[in-house]
Image (cartoon, rainbow, N blue to C red):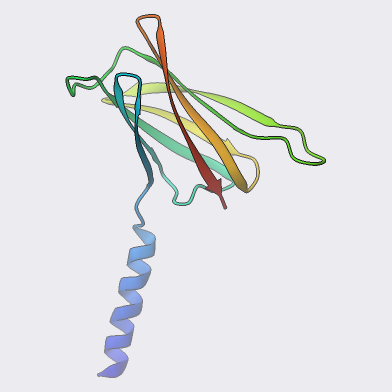
Length: 129
């Protein structure tokens, strides 16, 4: 009986890891409510899929904006700064992009939303493993 209980516990632990929640950030960017989800938690070296939901002040999805994900790592001794850009494409109510993080460590991410000639920015930091 103890063996069965232990096996069930291990199975639940493995299932929990397999279905870990996305890395999520919710913030305001100007008049917009922005939710960013990265498919890996924590983000990893290599490709990371990014989903961005943008809502206006009335709570309606924004589907007419240009969205760019700027991400980079500051310069360190013996290494220049790294800066990258990924254009996000609208699919349904979400904008989707791919970030390719070239090394582990702290990355600065800025989601830039341009709509009607005005740009709003949401900034956050991720630690890639």
